[in-house]
Length: 154
Image 1: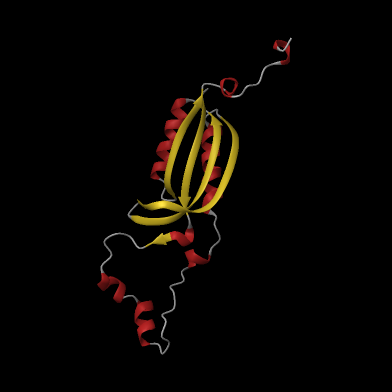
Image 2: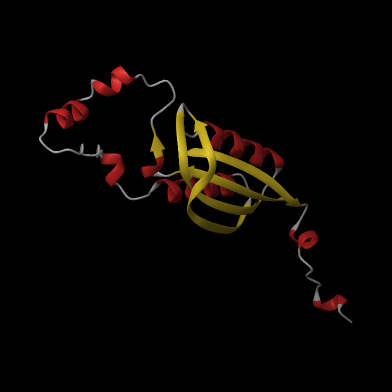
């Protein structure tokens, strides 16, 4: 089975920006905007939704779903690495939403090419994923590492 690395950027709860095409009239008609105009304070209060107050549960759930998919199809998960919350190099649009920040993570796994394609398709439809890519590291772990069995050292 080939060795693959999944590199994924998942959405960050606080990084969501208004989607393209939002008209100013729809923003002006929101209750929070009207409330901020009627208040005596000079600065409007930021919109706080339930989504903004919830801690990040997106990344662990995506990691679990990805690992479960690989394991259910006879693959082996070798390593996870959470690279943290970062600013994206440029604005990315996904599922009609613009993102400026995301959570980066990687997963190293052995699986058949069919399993890798299925996982890629599954992540492509998932709204929590901003970008993902699969890299083929090699045909097996032996071809990638410089490990030599003890019998061959003599």
